[in-house]
Image 1 (cartoon, each protein chain N blue to C red):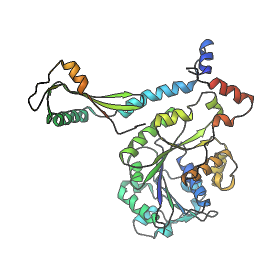
Image 2: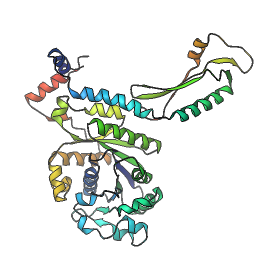
Image 3: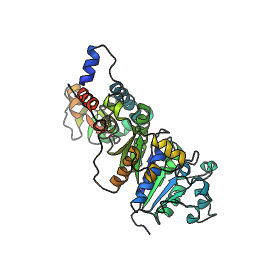
Length: 271
Length: 113
């Protein structure tokens, strides 16, 4: 039995910024470090975590049957084929939303806490009941956002709700960073986003076409494509979660050569 | 302002969009964050006045409580002109100076930097 389980909510407010991809890759990365990890799909309306992990055909029972006591927890948990430290608890039927209460989420998470080092909760988009149910069971949170005005604004709403519910620490992951656009000042900078949201940065994830390829295959990048730019970012985030001091990459530094030197010169603050 | 912004300005080109994004976000978030209904604000005003009235005599009609947002911080500003302390000493001077001296700033809990 794991005694000091960390229960982390992965949320964003806005949809499509990369919550589920982060949950899947963080789950794999933590499992690879030898930590038993459960990923809980709390997006009952539009579940996708099973698909990203390639486990969609192996689901027999879901969180719903566990809550209704029609099966045991270990019957519903789907163990990952390659990474046996990782298990998925699938989301139930969308009709669950009619009766699901915050206490139900707490019950599920309490059960998971008995067996795992980490419980990652993949939150639904929005700030309504689905989000509030998921938040009820969490101790800490990771807010995922993109360097875009709409995503940052929605993240700010979520951060406000996390603060009023005493969830802490709340850390930021800045996803889909495009170094070239950032260097050209056509994209909000890392400092812009962390200053505006006033959150510590857990990590950034570079924009990477391989993310789509990995989704197509149902194999998270951190499983089989560990050298892709985004996979490195995810692995670093997992290490930082474990307390390792991994320096952040500077996306502007990343783009090298004369072009990059010129762009850096152009970024010099005059006043 | 960065070197790029200056060159853009000299060439009369549009400034890079990141700074526009930043400014627009700061404005919209200041509005989003001070999302307190007028009833709640009014109730809070009355309760603050009641507490302060326990210690000093204040003009219940003059007190103003408002939200002001500056940078990333939203502050609750209460401006309460004091008439006299309760032990009878009349301290009433110019109401404007007095209110300056006795205004209390309470930072809202959200979004402290």
